[in-house]
Length: 109
Image (cartoon, rainbow, N blue to C red; front, side):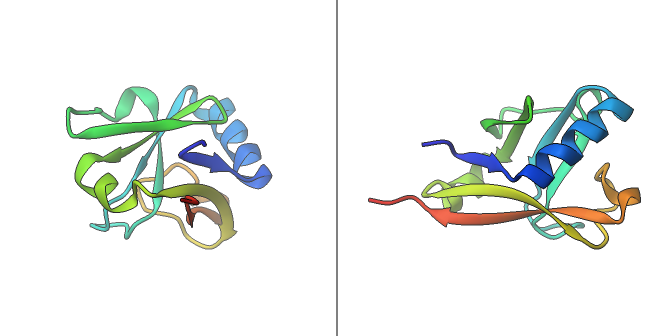
């Protein structure tokens, strides 16, 4: 079962952002400055470290999470959606008037 999925709206926004900014990546924020939002960055402007786990891809865009945070979320499937509102101040969707949102679903046993 996929660890991360995206809704149709999220996939459309990812495609729009990729057209403007080039290759992208997501990193699930751990709750610091921008809460616990999925953050979208230009791929060449975010450094993935040894403490990050690749969960999969959405819209041909890799999706990462910190290993420590992953320990809490490893039994869930993340579903990335888009809702009206202000995104994280560092995330690319901010000027669009919408924000990415992580919904989750526990994996069946």
